Image (cartoon, rainbow, N blue to C red; front, side, top):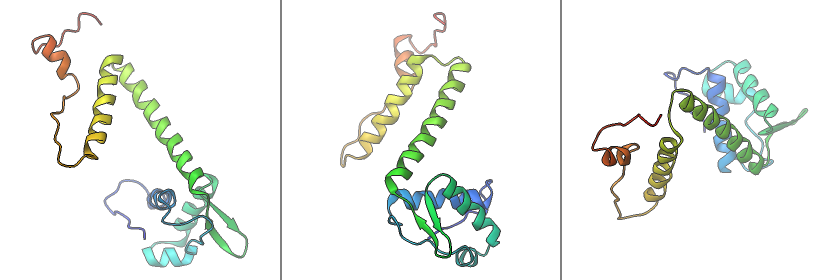
Amino acid sequence: MILLDPRDHRPIYEQIIEKMSELLAMGALPQDEPLPSVRALASELSINPNTVQRAYVELERRGFIYSIKGKGNFAADPKHIRLARLEDVGAELDAALRKAAAHGMREDEILDRVRAVFSDTADSGKTGQTAAKEKPGQKAEQMTGGKNDDSDN
């Protein structure tokens, strides 16, 4: 169910949160399905039950699971989980875009990279076709003869 990576720099409870939210978002744990008890999951993962409890508290705070006193923890609505994950990804993307802009990356360079990522994603879904990929900045290099002309910055 959940595999922890001992080489991962993140705390164990964060790894549990990530893995559980992935399972919940994929529907591997259907809505209203009971989750393993804190003790059972701690035993299965050979970790301290307090670590699992911390992960469950955070998952509940995010709305990924809910608890019923005396009954345990249960999977919440996967649609809510997907929306919450998209909000998290959006916040990370916003931060990355701000950082890129702060380091002088131009809007057209950012858009080229976005298009390349979406093109790669779309092409990976096609079988038997290989398209020549244009690396970000390659178009600009071709137009300037291989030189990066930053005079318009």
